Each structure stands twice: as C-alpha cells, then as structure tokens.
Length: 232
Length: 232
DNA sequence: CCAGCCAGTAATTTATAAATTTTATACTTT
DNA sequence: AAAGTATAAAATTTATAAATTACTGGCTGG
Image (cartoon, chains in turn orange, green, cyan, purple):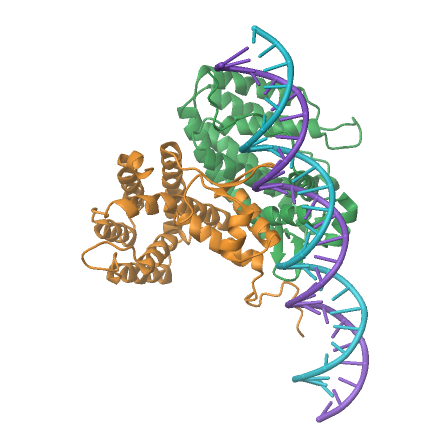
C-alpha cells in the first residue's frame, strides 16, 4: 500500500521560478551582480531569459533571505555590503557555530568522526586555485570547504540552527568573493582546518571552538583591512 | 543641507503583495489556516480578495521563512506541526536566546534596564484574557509579552541573531496558539517573567539565562503533553 | 491486476493593463 | 535671471486576465 502523503520523491522537475532563484542567488553571492545594483525587471528578463512572474517570485524569496532588498513600488536592489555587516555577521557566526560545534561534539559518534576525517581529506587534496601561478578560485574547493564546515556542526541536533548557519555562510561568502577578486589569499588556511580537525578528534571542545572562531575572525580581518579598496 | 541619497522616508504605501503576505502570515500563526492545509490559489483569491500575482509572491516569501512549504508543480501547503519540531525549536530558542541574553547583559546600560522595567510593567498590568471567567486570548498581552522578550535580548549587538530569534518566536507562537485554543493556560507565567527581570537587574547572568530557558522549556512541556489531543 | 491513456483540474507562465515613481519641461516667484 | 514649484511625459513597477503546461484520478485494454 502506497500511503505517501508527503511524497518524498526527488523533486527534480523544478519550476522556472526555482531555477531563476538559484541562478540569481549564485550570481549575487559571486558578486557578478554587484552589491547595491538595481535589479530591473526588463534587464533581468532578457539577461536570464525568463518572464516577469517567475523572476518576481525569485526576487521575493531572495528578499526574505536578505540577499535582495525590495523598496515598495520602487523595485529591487542587491543588498549592500558594509564593514558593519561584515563584523556583525562574523561575530554572529562565531557565536552560533561555536554553540553548534560544542553540541555536535557532545553527540559525537564514530561515523561522524570518520565523515569529518574524510571531509578534511577531500579539502586537503583539492587545490585552492585552478592555476598554479595566478590565482583563479576553484569552485570544487569552495564546495568541499563548505562541506567540511557543515560536517563540523552537522550533529548539533537542530535543523533550524543549521539553516541559520548556512544563511550566515552564504552572506559571508559574498564578502570573501569580493576580497578574493582583488587579493590572492596569502593566509595558510589549510593548517587552520587541520588544527580544528585535530582538536575535534581529541575531544577538546574548548580548543576546537576557539580555533573555529579564530578561523572565522581571521578571514574577516583580512577582508576588513582592505575593504575600502574593494568598493572601487 | 539635505543630501539624502538613500531616502529613508517612511515607506507607507505598501504593495498588495506585502499586505497579503502579512495577512497570510498572521492567519497561519494564529492557526486560522491550520497546519497542513492546502493553499489553493482560487480559494485564497476569493478569501482575501487579491489577484494571483501578489498572492503568489506572498506565498514565495512565506516559503523561505518555513511557514509555507511549496511542492513544485503541486501547490503550496501550510507547514505541518510535529512534536519533533516543537522540541527542536524550543531547544534552539533556549540556546540562541540564552546566548543573546548573556551578550545583552554584558552591554547593559541604564536606559536598557529602564526600558526592560517598563516593558515588564506593561506586561504585568495587561490582562492575560479578555474575559475574567472564560479564557479569550488578549492580543494586547501577546504584543507586550513579545516586546518584553525582545527587549531582553535587544542589546546583544547582532541584528541577524535578533532576526533569527524573531523567526523562532513566530514559529513557536503557532504551537502556543494551538494549545491555547484547547486548554486554559493554568501556569502562573507572570511570576516567571518577574523572576527573570529580577535576575537581570541583579546582573546575575547565569540565573537570568537559566530562568529564561526554563520559561521556554515549561511552555513547550505544557504544549507537548497534550499535543496529540490538539490535532483533532 | 497493472500499464497506459484521456478527461478534468490546478499550478505555472506569458501577455496585457493599471498604478506609481521618476524624469523632463514649463511656469511662477523672489 | 535663478531657484524653486507645479504640471506633463516617460519609464518602471505592480496587478489582472488569459494561455500554457503539468498533474490527478478514473477508465480502458492488455
């Protein structure tokens, strides 16, 4: 008997609205659509080749997620960036992911530790740049990097909290992209990840949380220091 | 000299989409639109007297906030409730607001303490029920109650976190409404608020956070205990 | 009994129209 | 004559109505 009310079959056949939502979000996060830019319907319609309604629905979704701000009767704009917000987001992420990591470690299982080890290994063997000499951001690295951090907090036991962390990650991602476009990331970020992993496997919560927060704060500091230069 | 580029004038003339968004959200939170209900466009259009486009935009916004779930090509539904989610939301709220309260108290100022005192006073003098005998939820009480809790964490210094707390409050509000409709709230909730206030004014963070978390946990426990009866 | 087809229904999208804001122009006032 | 205000035109956002597309459930035939 097939009594699936909440049909959980993979919803592959996405609507246009969902498709354009994902594309817009990606373009905003990578700053291809730069902060503050006006999102005129006509421009977006021909740029993305969609009608008004799915476009509008996508913009409305992005509005509640704070990637887009909608001025009533006056159209939509890409959310601005600011030093203030960078600091606020970083601070919040340190708090919340600190919390989530502590909880995760309290619920630690063998399989989780193994998954974390694997995630770190993938991160470690994925090159940061597509080219050896000049820096060219590697999307694969971004993917495994995010997966590593998601695994760290994944066992905290709160889906709402994980959703919030993901949103914070997205919002901060944009600042990273802005910075990356201008300055090659000089910091040895690989070592930081290793140290976090070691602290987690050693069951040293205090240390792990501290290192994770330091990791986020350092990233923010780099961006913050040449923030004014990024706006040109 | 008036050099307002980002004209901050009060955006009063709301669009239809924003209006219907607020109305739908209110009706979902009060369970006038009960959990799991299908939100057919035709029904909503005549119920709220609006066209498809603003309706659809409102539903899309509510989707990212998790008050509505959208099944691709299969319409929208009011988000379901579950014991699991109730627990998860409560746990998360305790964590996050505990954090926020601690930070708030660290940033405490005279004016904040005074505002808190006033908020509590208002809460104290607003009757819980509209009628003395039979219980009838007082919307004014809900308003000042929420204001009190918002003030508690208001000085934490993170707008993203405050936004998240507000969302958690909204999502839990719906569970409270379900419960209230069936059982008169027997608990003496007034005393709990007083004790929290006292702990805050006494600069006793540990105690304040503990009491706040206990407050939320107790509310959840009451709802949880007769949850199965609420679904009928 | 199951697969595939054919209404009927509902969701999604396009196309059209209405309302609002912005820009441009003309006019008054100092 | 310059500055500011009022009026008119253009552009853009918002909303309605129509058309398209996809799903639902029953039915037929294998």
